[in-house]
Amino acid sequence: EWGEEKEDGAVYGITLRREPVPSSPNPGEMSPCSGFVQYRTCKVRRLKAATLDLLVSHLLDNSSQEPDYSRIFLSTYRTYTSSTTLIELLFQRYSCLLCATLNWLLSAL
Image (tube, rainbow, N blue to C red):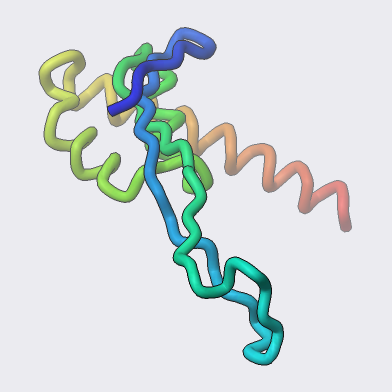
């Protein structure tokens, strides 16, 4: 754990992770450092705290989601909201998405 970042009302935990740099795709291409293992540092952000709306948005956003976020969210949401409220928020999000998609499809016809 490296620290925290705050952005738009959400708190993210920051972890720095070292990943090996892939070797050259051309096996005959040798660089002076080819005998050494090289790493790069990657910053990994995990959502730690946010408003319920932001938590639900993060739950539905596949591009920014951590691998275990859904499991953790669904295990703990009852400590800060009810099942009814969560279901209403999910239906609101999906109905907005569905309306936008239908409008786009109708305008394309």
